[in-house]
Image (tube, rainbow, N blue to C red):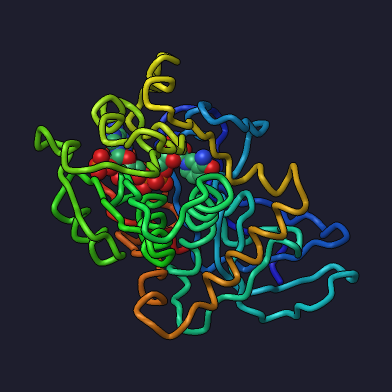
Length: 327
Ligand SMILES: NC(=O)c1ccc[n+]([C@@H]2O[C@H](COP(=O)([O-])OP(=O)(O)OC[C@H]3O[C@@H](n4cnc5c(N)ncnc54)[C@H](OP(=O)(O)O)[C@@H]3O)[C@@H](O)[C@H]2O)c1
């Protein structure tokens, strides 16, 4: 094994173009850790925020971005049970924009044999966000109407897919015909264009999944039924909405914050429930639902093209997930 590997390094925060290809030395594994030869790394909106220095977690500089990947185990600490070199895995972790990454063995899940490396790499962040949001936080029930904003993006498509599997009536809002077609293929019952005025009047949502915020918030709020629940996922639209508390009172609505990555860190029982939920999602049945659960890959980039991938996200042009081929 080579003692070095290639990675995209953020030496100073700023635009995606500040990322540089670098050769990094390997570090020895600590107990409970594994080394993965990364085949593909998922690209997420939080990567963009972290490189810009705007994410809630700010790693010390320099750092390698990337929160998810798929690849093969190439080394294990002596105390790691249940895995062996050559096993194909997917994981949520850090420093995934690289030919190799190190992670705790507890983060690994087996890669579904019939999924590509790209699909496996694109799964963990969006799926765990959708699962935590819709189920433990949002308490989604079969038969409820779920409104998904940003429904053609990474977390949005995962929410559409999971919501449909849960038996909800899914209304997807997305800005382009390509994004709306993707949402429909993922299981949406109705797809709406937010640029068409009055779109909100056709919806009385029990639960809203909102990764967008921004200017869409004010209109979408009107689509929430009295007594409904609103999931605050993120602010891809660029601004954080202000909601006067009397609006909650008038609708008897619930505003629910979601931090999918934090759930497990704070609460071991929540971590176990999330793990079981994602394993169930991955195992699925051989039905239409299982096909819907596959992440849609909108585009693939080389590792050294990471800035272009992040630029596509920032420009709102990604349909589904983007991935980097790391070798
Ligand atoms: N809370 C959590 O645990 C958690 C976990 C993961 C991600 N997030 C957050 O969720 C948000 C979305 O992440 P994602 O992975 O779904 O991103 P994504 O794939 O880029 O999708 C975001 C969607 O937002 C919409 N959008 C509206 N204005 C935009 C703008 N100015 N720039 C970019 N997109 C815009 C776009 O849909 P239209 O074109 O259809 O409007 C886009 O498809 C981010 O803020 C991210 O940080 C939160």
